[in-house]
Image 1 (tube, one colour):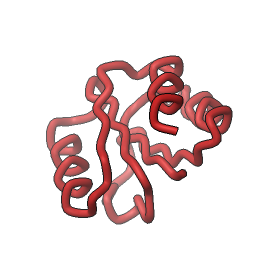
Image 2 (cartoon, helix red, strand yellow):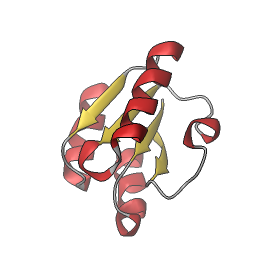
Image 3 (tube, one colour):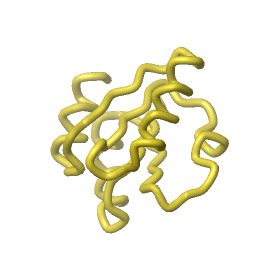
Image 4 (cartoon, helix red, strand yellow):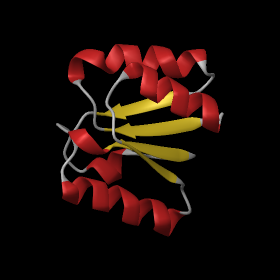
Length: 92
């Protein structure tokens, strides 16, 4: 399973990927400094958005693109590694 994470802290990027690996998930992390986010996402099975760490327009863009491509989008109000880990355990 491949999951796209939008938002989060740059300094925790490695921890996000490690948490996903423990769940058997391949994670693509976009912390918000990337341009043309949706062009870089590629093929993913699910998207997770840290709502406290992204702009409203980025959140809306991910939501619209997910809906048009049939990709489930999960919104988390946290940006912590443990919150991501729990979410990944629930979906994998």
